[in-house]
Amino acid sequence: QVQLQQWGAGLLKPSETLSLTCAAYGGSFSGYTWTWIRQPPGRSLEWVGQIDQSGSTSSNPSLQSRVTISIDSSKTQFSLKLNSVTAADTALYYCARVLYRSYSMDVWGKGTTVTVSS
Amino acid sequence: QSALTQPASVSASPGQSITISCSGTFRDIGSYDLVSWYQHYPGRAPELLIYKVTERPSGVSNRFSGSKSGNTASLTISGLQAEDEADYYCCSYTSGSAFVVFGGGTKVTVL
Image 1: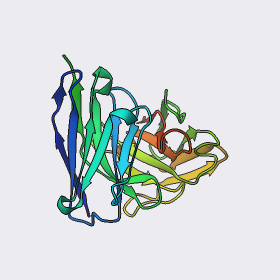
Image 2: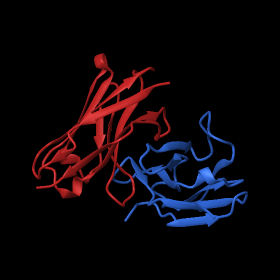
Image 3: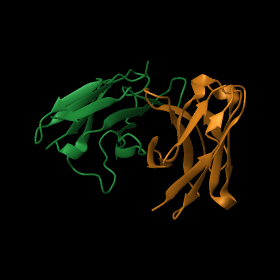
């Protein structure tokens, strides 16, 4: 069963760039779509964006101009960059795998807490 | 405010059944059978319980079931157990501005 391990900087200052990476181990990487989801403190889950094997991406329009998602299939990794962060970007960020043709997430990383504070 | 509307909390005694509703619109739940449900314990990653409205991943207890009527999806937990005390989120594909939208979450308390 595939497992996702994620990492990245947990404390940022306003205007800096958030950078997270997620690696898939123990299962197939190809053929899947991979996604990022976040949860601000005390709030619900929010879809950030996704990338498929061809490198085609889509992201939440509320974040679109600041989001870059990339994939490195040779390393079975995908990454999220969110630039010009503010306190509103403070959240628990999850990477996840999208179950084929279901728009549901069947495998999740453990999450990375990102705090934006001056 | 979340795109999908869930009750903030639901409580019941062990052994009882509960149903959590998830209200959307014709842009999401009403037009697509792409509703999923997640169980989330604080400090842990969410777990997929239901996908495509009624499908259950292998390993998920058959005490969890999903359904949909019109613009509203529902998650039923039967034979409630203490371990079911967690937050539950619905999610749906949307033809709106984002690919998927989530509900605000429902905290289930086992009395």
